[in-house]
Amino acid sequence: MEKRQSGQVDELKNRLHQFLEKLESIEPETTDLDEIDQLIRLIDELEDQMNKIKKDQ
Image (cartoon, rainbow, N blue to C red; front, side, top):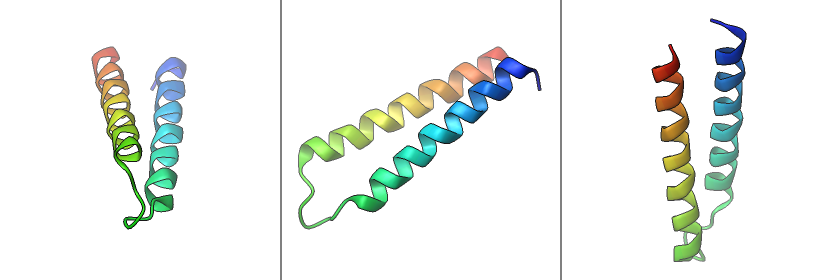
């Protein structure tokens, strides 16, 4: 794996870690739509990053 791709994968891992931390911190009883929308945006960003990495291979 070339260095650029390795950096992209590391960035993707960091973003995934951020997503998991956010997901774990959410309390179902008090979660509002804004928090859910934020999670959905994060998932979309992760998907875009993954697609870019696949395209660059």
